[in-house]
Image (cartoon, rainbow, N blue to C red; front, side):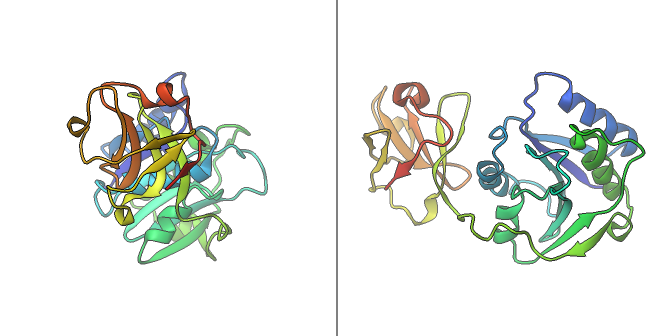
Length: 243
């Protein structure tokens, strides 16, 4: 029995997450369900891909991730896929959402889902297709009965890092798609015409001061001590960031 972690842009408003939980609960009773994230960048698979690759780190090595950021839902040209990446399985649309996970994996394989439900709506494949496939995999159905292997995805031109804001959290902190590992804290960032210095912690800067730091996911994050960086800078998802 696996853990199924859900990653979507549905938010917790409305019926969507609840309906997916209902399907998973019915088809995979007893499997642990984790709401990993439901406010991923809306309708933005490229930005969501950067976040997804980072936030799965605490999951068990054999976890199954049900990932749905799917602005092309219902388009016959958008495939439904399973990605195997270093022991984990990811179920979702083949629109680039799983690209960063595949790139950072030591071993990855792609499968196109061939299984079809009795009824498939045009607008909610998360509930009607991806959730049932995830439930079947979590309860022991062989992947070969649900999908066939295919070559790697078609998003080679997507950058590995994004020099822009990819998420704004509830505190107004601006998470970027920049890997913090190779950036010294002495570096300065430019965002929305403002130059921002680095610091290790919030308490290292005066109250109200903007700064950037290495966040817990290993990404560059811009914050304001006891303030809201997004409001102070007038920034949001997609705002460019320069070193």
